[in-house]
Image (cartoon, rainbow, N blue to C red):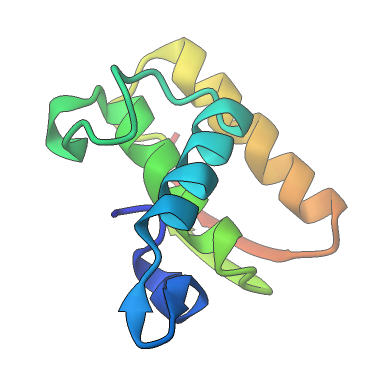
Length: 105
């Protein structure tokens, strides 16, 4: 639900939410973003901080936003997750996305 939230209109078919498509896309982003969770139905607040950040980034990547404003995207997360998020940010910039990165790190 969190990954698809900003793109819900893309998951509506004949006036109803296509949950199967939503689950397929969520699983794709789980793999692509290396989100560590039991399954895509697990509540976001049960995930580590780094994985929560990856879910939020996935939401806006799925939305295909051209401009991302990231305010403290790596604050309070472990070094491994921090590195993975930096990799994602660099990849987005390499794809031509505009990334405004605000960090006290």
